[in-house]
Image 1 (cartoon, one colour):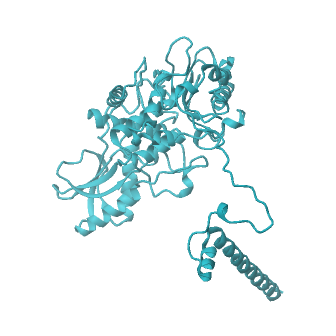
Image 2 (tube, rainbow, N blue to C red):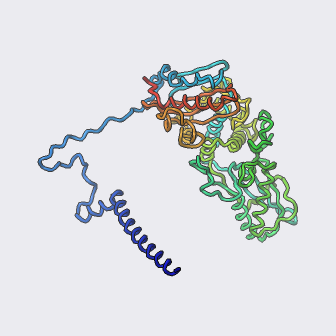
Length: 493
């Protein structure tokens, strides 16, 4: 019985295999014609090698009258300049901002992406509002401006041989995506179009162990240095429950998996110490014996570098920050901005540096105050016009290095934090709007770019920060509908 079943199974396998081979041949032939390879070989066999004639120049068969080939006009001519954006049309498109669910303080600004003038502005009460995560647009632009898109951050090990037992020091370089182990392709999440591939402590331990073995070192003491960033690990204006409730990880220059427990969203109490412990275990697996306790300590200036791993570059980090609204990585970028401009890797250093970048590029603060890089602080205030200024700076031909700010914005209805949003908005707007979301209790915001049905390319910022808690879901829908309507309108008519 078993043999009979096996034979029938083998016959089915042979038949299936033969069918697959036939399908493969047919598919290959189809692919050859689709790609032009087969046609090219046929032309060579006939002695007619060379580019095919323009179809319009080939004479029709005798007795057949074929009309001339006429190229169709483009569906929509790209439009530029504020003259093409009509305030009345923009106001009509943004009618949803009048929804009572958005509360009594709603700010809006819209203008051409390549201009200076604001074509439509609505201000109710104070001219600034709590921006929430739209703050990340400003942080990302400052990071690209000061650091450049290709900058990477290195996590290293150095060896101090001044004592009887050499001391190996793990030095945090501020890699926001340093991992426990190499990341798999599935770890980006369902809404991520990009998963940064950077350094990990398993690889660093392997490289360090190999270098130590070459030097004849098999036994070390271990320390870790997280002194690159200074100041408090949580901003004083953050809500008191952010750290204990695992809203955000304490910000440090050394962690693994952004300070999360393995396979969890729970945060560890001491991210740097946890990273060092993970590294210690990885060293042991690679044949290096670690003696004594693992202690925090600065790396000596004359120590010899043993190993290193690098982060994704700044452009890749920005893409992840804006697409998935990564609070931890945004705060790390702010520290690097402070170091580059002020020599100060703290909240304060980053804040001063951001203001300097904005002012240097002619962007007026207009009452804007930003205390952090992620937008978690409820003390932040921003003017919609400033967000327009940053988006325009990122689009300007003079600053191509800032272009990742625009290309990393989530696409309405398709990617990142907008994957499952705008489902109730005008369908024409989905795919025509890219925006950074902003959400805190009582706050909903969107800032980004849109192209309308006539090809008008615009920047916009929409902020509401007095939303009543029971109405937050409805307020977000109203905000989504307003933004999507910019893509679905004829805003220049």
